[in-house]
Structures are given as C-alpha cells and as structure tokens.
Length: 456
Image 1: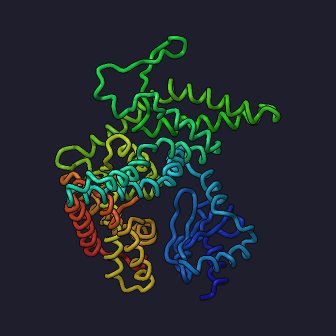
Image 2: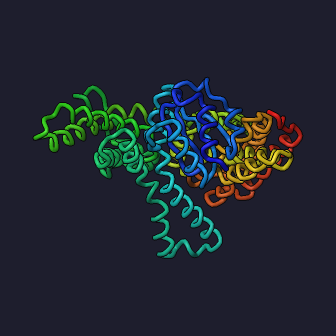
Image 3: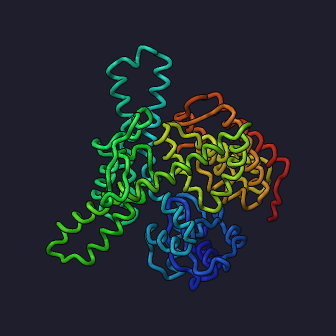
C-alpha cells in the first residue's frame, strides 16, 4: 500500500489543507476537524486504498484505516497538510466547538458517565455472578465469603454520587477532591438515606434561607443529575474565585468559599429542583418501557440507532445510571442490545451477499464488533452508507426490544451490551437470548431481502 498516495487522496477528499482545522488519529481512525464539512467528498475518500469507512460524528470526520495502517497514513497526511500533530483531546475540543449547544450538552454528559463505566461494570458483573451463585447454592448466601463479595459488588453503587462528582469535576475543570467533597456532602450519613425514606411516617426538615422554606433532611442516594449540576456549579465557582482571590490566600479562601457556597446551594436549591426533574424523566422513560404489549420498547428500539447517528445517545448513560441508582435494575440495556445486535446482523447480511471484496472486508469485522456492543463501524461504515441495511437494523432492533419488554429483561449495570450483556442480565437470561436472536434474525432477513446497490 502506498501510504503517501492514500494521504494525498484523503487530503484532496476533505477539500484541501485550507479546509483542515485539526487532525489526530486513534488506534484505527483518522480523526479530522474541518472548517467546512460541505466540502467533504465521502465517495472519493471511500475509494482510497485502505479506507474501510468514512463517517461524521460529534463534529469530527473519522476515516477508518485499521490498526497498523492509520499511523503510517497519518504521518504522511500531516506532512502533506503541513500541520502539527494534535492530541485526541485537542481534536475533541475543536470538534466540540462546532456542534450545537444541545449536542454539546449531551456529549458533556457522556464525558461524565463514560469514565465511570469500568466501576459500574465490575460491580454489576459481580452482582450478577453472586445472584446466580445464590440461586444455584441457596446456603452460600449465609457465608462470610458471600457477604464480603456482596460488599465488593455494592460499593460502586453505594458511593456512585461520589464517583459521579469526581468525574464531573474533571470534565468541568474543577478540583477533583473538592468535587468528591460535594458528592460526600450530598450523601452524608447525617442525612437520612434516600433508600429508607419510603418507610418513614414523617421526615425531619431543615429550615433554609432564613426560614423562607423547609427541605427534608434526606440524602441524594439514587440520584445522578443533582450531583452533576452541583459539581458543575462548584467547578465554575472555583475557577472564578481563582481569578479574583489574591494568590497569598487563594489556597485557603477559594476551597472554603467553594465548599460553603456549593454545599448550601446543593442541599437547598440545586438538589431539590433537579431531583424532582430527574424523577420525572425516569418516570417518563419507565412509563414508555411499560406501555402495554411492549409498544414503547418497540418504538425506542427502532429509534435507538438513529440517536447514535445524531450523537445524542450519550444521554442514555444518564438514564441507565439513574435507573440503577433508583431501583437497582437497568431496563434500558436490553433495548440498546437489541438495537446494536440488529445493526450487526444487517451488516453481516451485506457481508455475505455482496461480491465487492472491499465491502465484504469492511462489513464482516464491523458486524462482529456490533455483536459485542460497538456499533459505529457497522452503522457508519456499512449500514448508513447504503441505508437499506440501516432500516433493516432499525426494524430488527424494534422487534428485539419488544421481546425484551415482554420478558421484563433487566441488567445490574450499564456500559455492556450485545453478547457480553449476558454477564449483567437479571430477571430472564432466556428472555435476553430471545431478544438477541429475534433482533438479529429480523434484521438479517430484511437486509438480505432488500440488498444494496454495490455501485453506490
């Protein structure tokens, strides 16, 4: 492969070096930010030797080359474009500046919740494992070892507000430890644990704002949005204080004022208001999922892939984290799994039916990736490109989500979908299996029947 020639063709396809704002690469893709995306010639780039797909996402143009090739192409590309190599974070910032405020807000929420996924997955997997062992060996749950393992499994969920607070502080540029303190304040042991409120006849009150109104002495276990908003406010306040407080007293005054002001507002204004709003959002989502005959889940399963294309799918992390915090069960995961597996099956049908070796070489690994929960290669590299497979995948996702609703499938964590979702599935492993089989079968058959225009 001629890496220099490929780089020059890519540069021409994006509209020349004067249209390039920033560029970097990850393990498999060139990540470019363009001044004017209308000058992008996707068809020309797709014809470049070595290119396995081109798509636009979150303000970036991403060109898939694959491991071991992308870095060599980028070296030639940066020479031809005469640009300094940017970090992924710099490209990310340049891309973020181009997207709409709504998408930027959704993306920011994704940036908060995605880093927490390993902790949630570890706890969720362990919780699912313990549940299975407890059912298989009823006497095991009384052992000290089981009790210890349960402690490990619950830890991330018990202290989830603190994890969210730290991640939020990092995203908004605040001090991570001050963020953690705000999270601790909102679940302090001196406040009534939110899980215990339902069984209480009366709740002690705080009189706040000079007696203007009262608030319940209740913690924010089971909530995520109040934590995010509180720490976002804290980060902005802290940065402002650093600008105005003299250096000689900054170390003492800034943290003190930041914690006092944010802590009070978090418990008296931000917390109550956004907890109320969050409750209604969760109630709305759960109401949709609970619509009789699985109609709500069917609609959401069908629309899921479209939200991935638009970039607003990051909001689902917030919904899933809220579900787990509030009820311990994530009923959104099987819907996402149905949609992901369906897109993979639609891409697999393309791979098995087409004669074009380049399309086949792209579609096979893309479909396998989707079965494991990573759908971007299948959606952007194959299905959206030819549209019919994307429609087939959306229909398959809708059918699979319907099955998940009928069997009341749930999960103990978020961040894992597809085949690996079995590890965190609760309620009905058979229901989850049927969800994946139905979504994949429907999508595959429809994609096969519709076919694609290989000359497109």
